[in-house]
Every structure is written in C-alpha cells, then in structure tokens.
Length: 424
Ligand code: DOR
Ligand code: ZN
Image 1 (cartoon, rainbow, N blue to C red):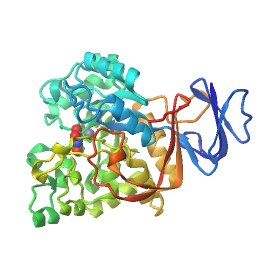
Image 2: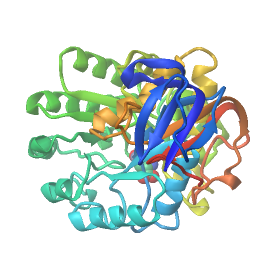
Image 3: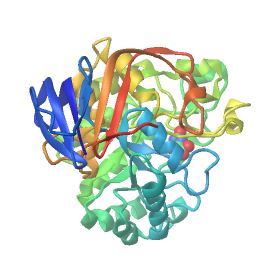
C-alpha cells in the first residue's frame, strides 16, 4: 500500500525543507520526497494543494488516564483526540491508578495502545513509588518495559537527595527525567497565580517563585549528575531565565510549554471558570511574553499540551475545590496557529519544529522527520480553515476546556500514522 500526498507545502525542519513538494509513503514509511513525483501503480493519491505537510506532531505530555481513571479518558478516546488534533504520537504520564511505577503497568498501557490506540503511545514511568516522593520506583524495570522518560508529573519530588539518586540511576538508560517543578511549601493550597488578581478575587495563590526555586534546583542537580532534566509546563519568566542560563552553561536541561500558558493569563481566572485552573497556574502577561520569546529562540524546546481530562463533576462548582488541568489535544494546533503564527509572533516553520522534530529528538523517538525511511507519520495543516471550538464534538471523553466557543483560523486537516490516514 502506498500513498502520495501531492502538491502540498512541505515543512520538514529536520531536513531543512520548506517547499512545494510531493511526499510518497510506502510500507508504513516515507519513501520519497520531491517535486512532481510519479504515483506508483496502485498508489492512492491525495491532493493536498494549498495545505502544509509536516512530520507528525508529537505531544510529549498527555494524561491518558488508563488504567484507573477510565471515566476521564482511555487509551482509545485519548489517542482519537490526539489524531483529531493532528498528533501522531503521545507520551503518557504515570499518574494513573495504579501508578505506572513498575513494568506490569507499562506492559498494560502498551498492550492497550496496540489494540485500541490510533496513534503511537509512549509511556512515561514514575520516578517514585506511588508518586509518593519517598522511594524510587522500579526504574530499571520501567526502562526495560519501554518507558521513554521518568516523571512524577502532577507531583514534584520535594526531596533533593532522592531526586539526585533518581537522576544518577536513570542516567545509563539515556532517557530524560521530567520535572513538575513546584515547591509545595511555597504554594500550599493554591488555586491560581499569586499576585494582584488573586488578591482582588480572593483565591489562594502560588507565587512564580514556587516554580522558579525548583527549576533552579533541578538545573543544579542536572549539572551535578550529568543527567538530562526536562522541565514540564514551564510557566514563568523567571524559569525561562534560569533555563536559558543553564543551557548557556552547557547543562543538559530542556523545557516544554503548553498552549494555555502561551495564550492565556491569570486575567482569565476572573471568570471563576474552573477550566482556567491548572498546575502550574496561568501567569501574567509578562510571563506569557517571555514564554513566546523563549519558544521562538529555542530556550523552550517544544510545545506539549499537558492534556489533563477530568469529568464534569470534578470541574464544576467551587473554583477552590475543582481539579487541576484542562484537555488540550484537540485545541492545541488551532490555538497556536491562530494566536501565535497568524499575528507573526512565531514563524510557522518554528512552530512545526517545536511540535515534531524537537519533542521527538528530546525523547529519542523515531518520528519528527520526513527523510526517506522515517516512519510514515504526517500531519497536514489547513492554515485557512476556520474552526469553532465545540467540546461536544471532542473525541476526548472529557470536555474541560476554557476555549469553548472560540473561533480560530488554522487547523489540522489530516493525520497519518504509519503511512495511513487516521480517521478518528
Ligand atoms: O493541571 C494539571 N493537571 N497539572 C498537572 O501537572 C497534572 C494534571 C492532571 O493530572 O490532572
Ligand atoms: Zn501533566
């Protein structure tokens, strides 16, 4: 089976391509890329004139919730949401029930993904047993079972000595440790960012310093151990500064940013909509400006959604009591195209890189490139398509988004995994 994508604008940052070309996929892989390719006998031809053809997007921070929280999301629904949002691969966090802190849970997720998943699924193992921050998880077993990184995401390992051991222990596996950077002693009971708005509307705040203190610690521990630390959902101007400085000194630190931290500020919380509550919280305009700049200059390596599905009952009622997090897979690409690329804040090719080549490289995954022989994972964009965000139509099992009702220009048009179109 082969498939020819004809006439699209191919943006393949890994190979320095930005030109109108054809892409031939065969036997699950990229076979050829070039102008005016002949369709082999029996090949399906898709005309993608006027569209943008990219390496498949990789979301390295997703909560698929399975096992244990299937009422929020499953591998089946979460990977469909990913495909609908233009993602061909997701890495899934360990805060399931049971926690993915041993090889049996990883095996379970991979088996589910094989049978029910429609995009590639890469599990992330826990750093500590039960995410309790007390003793190390079965790290070697997790790596052996196929985990592509380690993280206690949702929680932050407060004990620096234990985190140092985790970094040392995982170093030979060649995978990053992902930090949910949050000093709990600085943000006990928070519901939003600490500042003028939290004071005005009377909600408990987390200061930017709660994140910055831990980012500083983690950079120092990366330096001490030589390990690769990746900062999840970086949200403050201070953390940007620390990562920039760490990279300049040659420390192995990388970082991701979410679409919501790029396009929303704490002002959104004035609505008291629990769908503006997440960890880390929405910050200030000064922070979002620093994040956009850092994403453009590469200080922040990639965009990841932190897709965090929750049931309606967990996201209605009092803001204080609502669960942290929002779904992101089905709105990310349109938000980024409409809010960053259209107004000229971020070049399209940079965005494509931050969604494909960069996360793939960071996790050592096979995708992120359209070179011949690469996996046939492709995301096709329609830059002119106007979409209205309607959570009722989400493939995700959950609907917790603050973006309902928005009309955005630019959307994923087609998602191909292993050379085949995924119809979620
Ligand atoms: O808002 C968040 N929700 N942040 C996290 O780090 C965890 C996530 C979740 O699991 O719901
Ligand atoms: Zn998360």
